[in-house]
Length: 267
Image 1 (cartoon, rainbow, N blue to C red):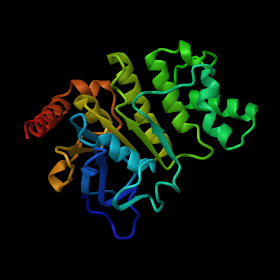
Image 2: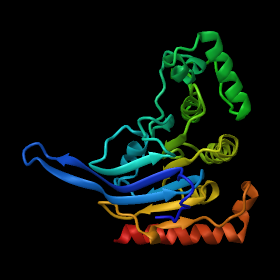
Image 3: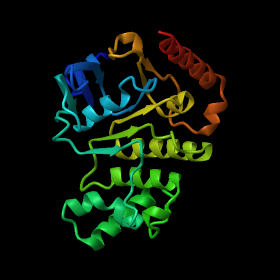
């Protein structure tokens, strides 16, 4: 847990969060995934959730997004419950509509909001220009590469009727090559600066987590509990560019977090 000012509302405020799933049809037992998790992020920043496969990272993000209801505890995005907040969510499998042009796929949240087609397209083109995304807007989903599908999903998360209250990304680098990973990381820096909203992502990529995040949270075991020792501030200067990744300060931070991640694996 992070200490917060009594006069401000945390940008992410999770208190006593627990979540379990039914484990087996016959026995009707439940498997606990998150247990009494608390995390307060005092201001908009980028938070990287790290841990091994199956530990509960995706479950945590889905609870933040309002897609799953916790068994107990509370979640607030600013002063709002997740179901009342406007959250841009980028799932791990990067789904696209294969029959839609990229511009129409990105504009789906605007279409749901009842915005007319010409204005939807104008907003998407402005968004792509503002954040310098490289995406063929006239190409249909079935013809997009894996990296392009990722960009479409990120653009769609940003193409909301009003600025989103938070951006969530589940394993955003898992299907990208090295060049695309760095490109996405730099996009996240720009989005964080331009929108001033919290970004929360799950990842196994320690170097990229250090490069983009202000805060790293370790999910070490199942069920997940988060103590003060599991929350690490990334003490690197901002703004950051790729030259930082060659610095000894960066390499030391990566080595330290890799060691922590390995400790979690051995438990």
